Length: 171
Image (tube, helix red, strand yellow):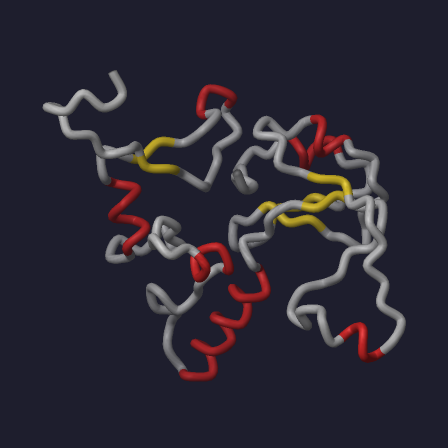
């Protein structure tokens, strides 16, 4: 499970150094160079998706740094990590659309998990655009959100499994 990017995120209110913030895009972001690893955010995260980085990925040699993705910040040991919905891809897609002189179109931005899913089960897009694929899926009767009763306002939603009413599956 990934971070739900909650509107009323309980992890944001407990961070003593404001390392967990809400962006203008509606994402719950982790500022890695501000995080001191108190783990308060992990303790207050209902889906428990935050992880403490125990590893030191410091690559001092230039040849060793070549194995790392240059678009992703390498977090130091002792910080909390979570899914960022590939914020670097979001910013690159917005910049490409701006250079082309057009708004961001549906499908311009693809997260890494969406790109690597062979079934096409992960959809990313603008919920405010009624013509987008993700908006149509959210409006379908199969959409549900986790932890709705906690009033955290998760942005990530899921679809229920399609079942054949005549089959014995799930009985």
